[in-house]
Structures are given as structure tokens and as C-alpha cells.
Length: 120
Image (cartoon, rainbow, N blue to C red; front, side, top):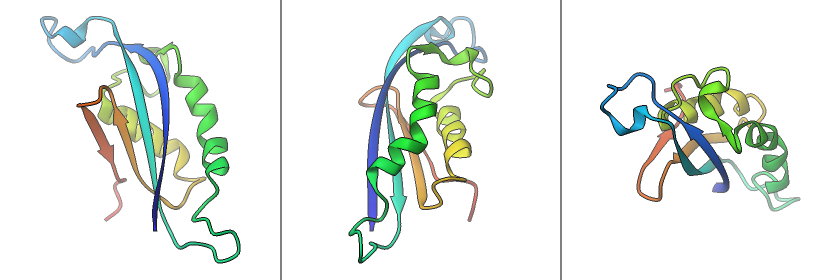
């Protein structure tokens, strides 16, 4: 079974490693959407792969760290591309959510990155 839970936050960032002529080199903001995808068996007792409230509990502290902040100021996100944000989230929540199979980071409705970990 595959389940997903989405979260939203607002944040500013700039991409320091692109040319100065690139529009993303300047400070700007996004309405981000994060999707956490988990795989696992349905527990016959609870009927859940995992309780959505448990996912919220694990991701909540990170969400508060990201929401309405400048992402460049967060340790580990000095170059806050969608790809790097996905890896940053994965690295912090995978130890507590072993069923995590993907982190999707949407910068816009049309642009997103998906990370499934480095494991084969």
C-alpha cells in the first residue's frame, strides 16, 4: 500500500550558485507543497499503514522550521533548490519514518523534485 500526506508552507530563498543574471539568484518566495510518500502493509488491527497523525508529529518540527523563513538561513539549506530541500527533509525524517519512500517538493504547481533516497 502507498499513502501520501501533503503539507504546505511559505518561504523565501535565493539560489546562490546560479549566475547573477538568473532570476532565481535574487531573493524571492514560493508557496511550497511537500508530499511525503510512504509504503507498507496495512496493519489488520488499525487499518493503517501508519497513522497520518504520526506523520504530522514527525514532520511538524521541520515544517515550523521552514514556514515563513528564509531557507538560505537554515543549516544545510544554504543552496535551497527543490532537490536539496527534498534531500534535507528525507535525511531528517527517514530515521523516524522507516516506511518513507519518497519526498516531493513542489515550488509551483508545475515544478517539483522527488527524492527516493540513495538506497538501491
